Length: 459
Image 1: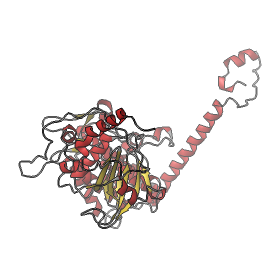
Image 2: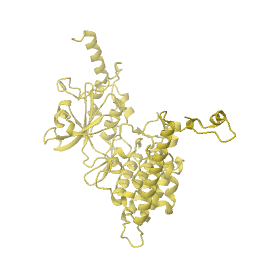
Image 3: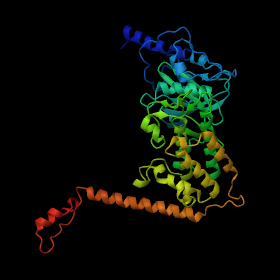
Image 4: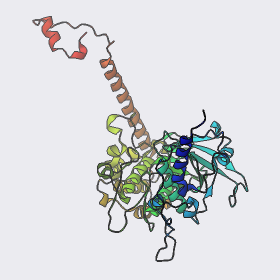
């Protein structure tokens, strides 16, 4: 059925409301015709209120161009293209058709994974595909309207990664905003996420030196964000957002939940609590007050995961061990309990001194009091020298493999006991369980006996 004229006017009104942000990449439906890309939610139907001009990038007292914030761009109502607002960012503006071709129609064989924003596909752009763009592999993230993130998170990603450049931040190559579609284009990170290597046991097992390198690189990425002239709070630091290049160099990705940090006399940013269970700082969960120290806590959780090879939260573990921080934090400051913390997969192949010092860094980051947590620059300062401590360094003892074997046995026995306990509880709760009728003791009536029997043992 053809659309009515009123429906067409409504559609035009929707597009005009967002034209000021996406003028250069709203090319109409032609390039997206027949596309199987899942559309994002429709923008608000309220028309934008026009203002004389859009915000231009500010200039600091040092003469350097200051970073635009998400608020700066969201508040503008001119018809300026987003790419103009991000002048100097070198972001490419793609069409849906171009990205569909690059990913072979978003074929399943190119599927890399899926997060709160939507699915991610591997692709390739050829030489000369876009002016100034070299031939390279890319990762294309599609906005899923049924995901947990939306247009605001897409815009945050473009604004932050479009302006921030650091060796330990993933590079945003470009973006697309075509009608209802929102896509993001990144450099391709062939080794995938830290999460996959730690918990899904992608071979090979990460060595101690590789793990420590990843921790230091991730810390440098966070320190860069916190120490920027306009500080950034990452807000979703976790292993799945740490991507690895061919040399296992770590880069932070997914800035959809990032926030501009407090400025001036402000001590925190008040915001809706978001993030991932097990990684968020306790004071942020309780109050919604977000600070750089919230990220420091999350870093402590990830560092503990790197050391232990265990997830922050795992419901398959015994009940007292399901929350990793609650279970292990007190051990981090005790060198005698280091063997209980360290990943058995390392088989004891790590310098005990370096491992203990890294554990102490994690302990301080996980302090319940934000003021007792170190700044990320201090974390980098403490962790980086540990890279030079190797297992063949004189005077640096290596934890014996026997300790690791004992820890593996302890965890296995604990898991077995929990399994038996769960099976026993399930059997007791089962209505089909057959229990022989017990007899009363001499001198007691059968009715008296059954009255005082536990309910679960009655036939």
